[in-house]
Image (cartoon, rainbow, N blue to C red; front, side, top):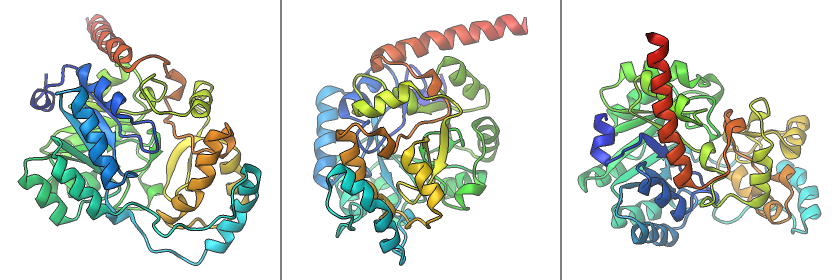
Length: 357
């Protein structure tokens, strides 16, 4: 077992991807950690109070290490003048769902400083983040209290910047990954490097552990990532259909029919490039030719529609985040999935030995 796994007591090199908006429940985090992996709590959309509650719940259920994930405030961009056009586009969907006319909330996203205070006070062993670098004061605060920091990169240059900023490990996010891209140093469209190409280049460029992410759904993918030099893998889509996940019923149903050629990259829902299953909203948005609002404003404006669509079971209006490995999704418990991954790793190693003679 490598240094990263030994340090955090992992018996299987799997990190649960932090999946915001519902899927990453404390119960899912705990199930992965208890099974020998590293559970990750998605806190970027949570209030300070909710963060404290969720961390307390995780600690009630396990003494194992876990991570808490935040978004870098570096990703937050000023509002432009496109509100009316986007609101007009959303209005028919609001009417269809019985919602009032679209309008921006007073607060488009939770306050990062308040979130950081909550995380710092709770002092989880590991904090991960994406969408950029943490403010230096935030990094210093967390490092001073002994927190292990993990950043997210989609290019070698981003990985180098994260190492220079003092992180302890880097997640190398390949273009196959579901949900939001972590890109921050170049335009997102210029950072679509596949996992197999990205991971070894990041490994060669850094002195710290690298965690591979993107398209990994089973033991074969995990072994491949380790062969590329990764210390562990981060898996998100693979856990979306687990019983402990907070994935909505309509989202689960869409995922079970998802295939590798049905995902796409879009800014339609949040203003940031993210990978999910194609659906009605994405197709209509693409056809409209409209310019999206910058993140987090587009995300805030579409949020009421997405929440109502989940309740109304209208998958066509949901952000159905999923990676390109969605066709290998399993409906099971997190514990059983981890058990299967462990056996698949052994089998993959055995097969490799046979092939290599």
